Length: 461
Image (cartoon, rainbow, N blue to C red):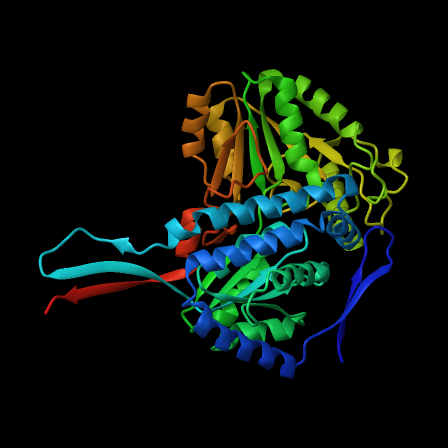
């Protein structure tokens, strides 16, 4: 039996081993899902919501254990890991609260002799492929609304965070969810691709890399099924001269370095009005130097390792290439004894004298580094912010909210912020443009991607 191994970035030890599902197990899951969906689609939305709410209750009751496992699977400092359980709860309860209204039939104006309405029909069996970086919150974005919409779910979680799928399953079982409505499988890449091609899969939700999104599209090609793809990001922030500088630095730097920069919507490029560029950099560097890089199981740690040594070395390579091309690095890695090549522990870094010819300003870094450029006005800032293959989120920091909103309207991004960043509001649509993907999760609009319209045109006899 083939297995997958999870190496903890905390100390390089084997944390989890799991057998990969074989063809018989995959076939069994598909049969259970297909049979369960016939019943689940006819279950009232209010009843679906009660099961999901009970699942959330069971899930958050294990907060401390879940946070501990999260730290050891992917390296989030234990002082911050519990926040993901809170985020899971916020998003799940938000989607539960809006489900009945969002999924209600659309009633049309009276027309003599006719009854007309549009129902929202579930798609069927949804395959959800979830990532490791926010393993609970990214999964809940797709799992809970899919089930609320009358679909059944098979979850394939990252090999780095397999326990997350198991813990969500256990919470659903504690809630008494009928068999087959939610299942998980530990799968190889080849088995995942084959599952996407299976005609019993009616919807695929994928969060991950651009290459992963291309894999989904390639395997779903010709089947005309719905796919939702949340892919990469190189999210920018613009700091205008009129800001409260201390507040702007704290907000944007947390948006860049939380979770060691391993967020699809983390800030990776900062553009600063030239007149405040020097004080911004001084404050940003001071903010970085107060971070504590260390063992994430220690409550005093504020910056943990990245997910694996190869990811750390990728970021090191971006930084080295930028410095060789003329960039200035403001942090000495030598001040961080754990940060050595071949280690998952990586010193935070801020770079100036950067430009868009450098990899660190164009490639997704997914690590604790940010490039900072001076700009001479709003137009230059907007042009640089839009100069990217990605478009997930963008942020503008300003005291003038009217100007901030006007600039936000010009940005090529799925979500735009003023005076905050790196946040998902469950009542707002979560979507991307360009290579950041397509489709929509969260909000009432998210339910539209998990259902199909069915029109009823009933002539009275």
